[in-house]
Image 1: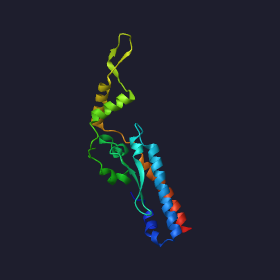
Image 2 (image 1 turned 90 degrees about the vertical axis):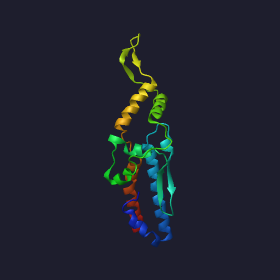
Image 3 (image 1 turned 90 degrees about the horizontal axis):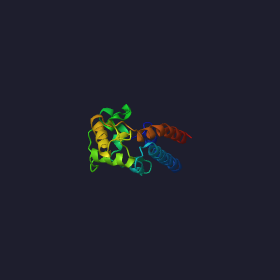
Image 4 (image 1 turned 45 degrees about the horizontal axis):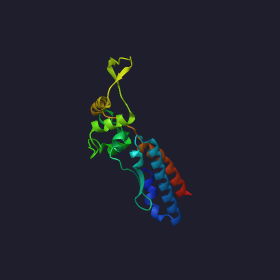
Length: 183
């Protein structure tokens, strides 16, 4: 994604002195690192795979990308099905992920079963109590089945982590660059 307001600075980039170009590049790198750090702190954690996949990639002298190399990232960022929700500013970007299937991700049922087993989540049974009077628990498989059917029908709610970090840093970067270039 491009930062609106930054394009003018970058067009003039080659006309700047070597010192100013170096400082502009350092500011952009600093912002890319700040976005990565904030996105990592906001990303859903579970096993840490999503957080560990967030990195900064240098494109050229002054351009950097914050990259999330986890196939489920857009689904967590924007939600799915009925719960899909995205800021209008990023609607065109997010639309590219609608209907996309994740390769080699396993089935929803298998992934939910692994998750409920790892987290030891078991729903209470609606069918009464045990002989000792305690609430009867469903098995992990039964609990996973209920959750996966709910998700298959309703989708998952969004857990934005990258775009809020980007939006938070964008205005700060523009202000710092304007100060630097106009100094």
